[in-house]
Image 1 (cartoon, one colour):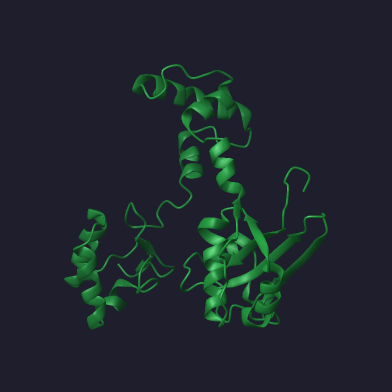
Image 2 (cartoon, helix red, strand yellow):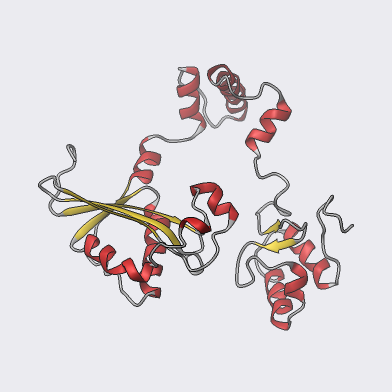
Length: 267
């Protein structure tokens, strides 16, 4: 690394996983590149058998399927090599402070190890990117319109700038749709997948509502209501600071009325 003065080794690392829940999800690929202060590099990379099915939504992100990891080692089998790569080193990643490191720590802990991070410095390129290249309207106006925004955070100035930015984006990117319907679909790729604004309930492939969080994540509302602790959990949610649209659906579910997605065949 030409522009970073290293006092000890720096390990860049990245994970591909079955999802984003630190407690439940597993690693399906791990890569580490260790850079020594003298510039020498060593690399460790492997697919990992998560010992559970890889959800289609995860495969859609990283392209790794169940059949790809059938013969791969489990994390328990590679943990020693991972720990050796990380030994006496600082860390670097992209969104690794918020995601990769917590999930890696969870995997190490689940397989009987302990990732000792005392004294370890952690560099996150995404946080530097966001700090140095703000993604606000002022930055967008400067980038797309090549002018400084005067009167930022004045409502009229902001909305006028937004329309100019939108028009400039259409001029820059020839592959963008030219009609509102097409741009709506581009800006809302998940529209129709969720039942509530905060995405706590989602439709499954059978047109049933499933929770996307908590102890009953992935379970349908009828399944949850069928068990005593499930009904108690939904009642607990009703007493917490969740969205009113979610609560309205849960109240109906507790009363025996369950939502069905239009076109699912069971209306």
